[in-house]
Image (tube, rainbow, N blue to C red):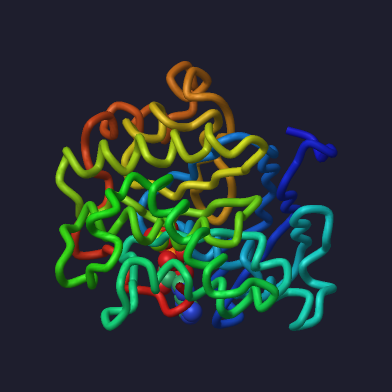
Length: 269
Ligand SMILES: Nc1ncnc2c1ncn2[C@@H]1O[C@H](COP(=O)(O)OP(=O)(O)O)[C@@H](O)[C@H]1O
Ligand SMILES: [Mg+2]
């Protein structure tokens, strides 16, 4: 895909090395279209999370360019980066809710931080609307995370990710470690949230190729620090690339990453 104004995120020749020798990302280019769901897949350790952290401005590239919503990330100062990051909603594998806060308070947290223009009643109104949008019934709004099921906690995490009305929603392994029923619930939630929010760009890192095909408008497969294939699910099914063929053969309805390599909870949530 070429750079164009329909790109929400445009990554060109991105390189990242942590130790000055091995390149985790090695001349990676990727256009993420606005208003679509793009699923990033790849074997464990191929740099999917590192790529997401670059998109969020949490890691600096060794070289290359990242444009997000028209702004070159590498040229932004800390304040502008923070502003830009507030246009993202993030949901990671571990919802990382605040344990001592109710569902409502968890969703109000980003509002208190970044929407000082709102009064408490307005914040409560928004929190209720987001929790409802994420499918949590109002009888759970005042519960603490420990009093909720895993599925309910995911909904609260999503509601919190939606609090600031993000233009870009980012999910890193949102279903890793979940049972099949919950996995389907979260996948459906990603699609319904995307469809309800016109123009939202959704980026999902997934270990589950079946889900990638089901929910993704586009799929990008990383390998060796680059994008091996970026296309529609149909293009993946028809690909002649050996590694893609193997991944497709192995991946449908099967977990691709060994449990032991599941990422640790990340501090950026
Ligand atoms: N902060 C870091 N410092 C050094 N190496 C890192 C760091 N973050 C990730 N890596 C390395 O980068 C590679 C890709 O990691 P990651 O993006 O987490 O893979 P995954 O595709 O499973 O999400 C791994 O080899 C990992 O060890
Ligand atoms: Mg990861």
